[in-house]
Image 1 (cartoon, rainbow, N blue to C red):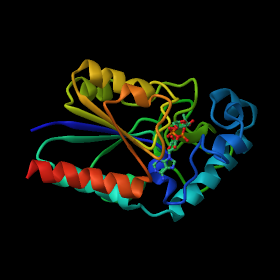
Image 2: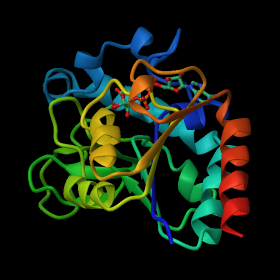
Image 3: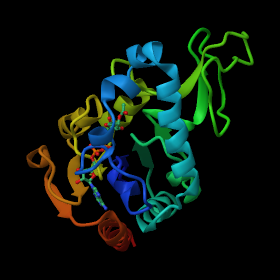
Image 4: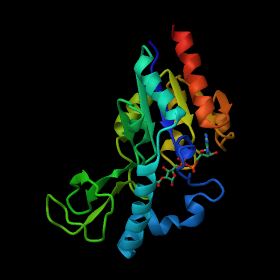
Length: 232
Ligand code: OAD
């Protein structure tokens, strides 16, 4: 049976009340990327970076998964083939919707990472500058999120999935950040059918075979239903 690889972005969590990055009034209109989402920004002003992610952790903890997260969890459960969900999101809403496995290529707000020894542990709700690493003791705890200039996680595994997929879907992502923005081309090279599911067509929409536009809470459940109906 066909394999499906799905990439999700901030747009899938928008209707759960979490702001996107590049929409009007989005996070990158309120904060400078170089201040809060780069290793250099963290070295310059760790208090500011922790404050940014602490606020996002509080917001994410209060958010509930929406019908789009739930539909993808259903697809993963009921589709007769493999469904791989890769997310750029650092929230835990796919897991909260009972998705069996999610590949967090940009890390998670739930994680802390030691900048000295790479040890990972569960982040407290509020991280502070000088957070001690439970493994090596260095006062170097940071959020376990991928910043600009850093290599996203699980890339070999993700490219293996893309090279073997029959269908690739990008949901709620503007397609402006690489390497995720290049996944559609990789999947196409592998001969996969491709679909973009977004509020509006993204700048890269022409790279997809099909575009479904509208809010994720209506488009994604309808798309999942049509796939499962065909599989029956
Ligand atoms: P963006 O904010 O760049 O894009 C969000 C996309 O979701 C846009 O194309 C919106 O049109 C769409 N959208 C908004 N509301 C929606 C809704 N209700 N239903 C469906 N689509 C909707 O977010 P990402 O593409 O996820 O990385 O951003 C990618 C990466 O850039 C993030 O992971 C983050 C950011 O900088 C890092 O911090 C490293």
